[in-house]
Length: 529
Image (cartoon, rainbow, N blue to C red; front, side):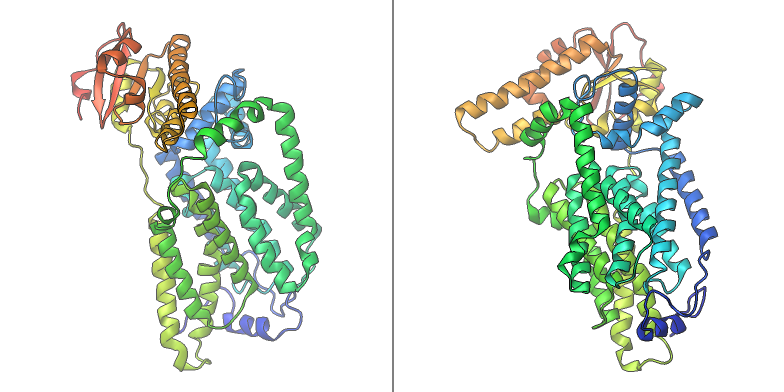
């Protein structure tokens, strides 16, 4: 069995990698443009898919926050968002352009995200071509395209997606550094800026920088390798960003950060539950297969990719929420090792010039990598908009409704509100503060702490009442759950009194649609369960 590259002769390039004294200057110059057309076709497919499928709930909410900021709402005062400002600022250019040309921002977000991904791929490839990591530019280009465009299709434009786009050029530079090659100045700057972007979105991404940086330092046998210029750029950018947040968004540090540490961070899944997920299980199988393919061979590109992936696992464990998109960084970081380096190793193992005795183990490894990576990918492709059944009833009541929800889940109101051309009048996306307080009450705190937490629940309910009085929503979506509703209301009559002036019109998958009394009835054909 022989697996051949589409561009160039892998066997010849592999010999160069093994025997050339100057790893940064292989004797056979690869075709740098190989795979560009295929990557562009892939990008167009992803854009078309995102256009049809639409954006996920988290990103839809952040777009709503960006819209409200543009309309003059005070960040972290008039509208409360637990994420740092960079999560919203990333989307502001798309919102600004959408307002300028008069279109929804969602397709512009997709175009911006694809554009950033393509730029990251090309910059990373230019860096990697100065190392021995690239046996086939077309293969590497498409593998990176898979990691940044296909793998995250159901979590497109999430903060984790943007962060990995930023980190890819930095990881590429680390591969070059591990081989003691001298990088170009632009590569150092781009890598540093990308790392800074990731940290500004979530500081936990430092784990995905630190662990591969340790691999580089070990490869170079130099402690000084932990203080390379790109890391100083990351650190300086992080300090500058912190200064901007303190100066321009004072309410974030003064009020939101304490709330997040008090009511959001403590709500955690057990570590075993965080780790026992299909995304990580299938990826682990693929890593075992990669070991079977590579044997004792040590490649910096593999070590750095897997170290970053391990940092991604730690990223998920530190957050301990178990959300699917929290696992994307780990799997995406492993893809270059599993797919690109895995194919290169397979070419070598199945070459006609190699010893046949090791082929059964290599065959197992190749199959394990393929199966693990395929099923890890499928575990991310759960496209779901659970509230689509409410779109027709809402449109029968109002063409441009003002909407608010009472629910522990963000997906009840988002992206539904934007999908029906509505306006969100709530100051929070869901009742996460009540959920956090209930979680801590379940830990049986002492009496003073229990009173404090009960007061926070009352404050959350009062906030919703104020949002209704101020925003005068046409629609209030009420999820019949066993958390928020029992904590806020002792009976249905209390809920009805809280929503005075509204009537329950429709029920869909446990979510009740309450509409203002003066609005028209839902058409009978739209009703259902």
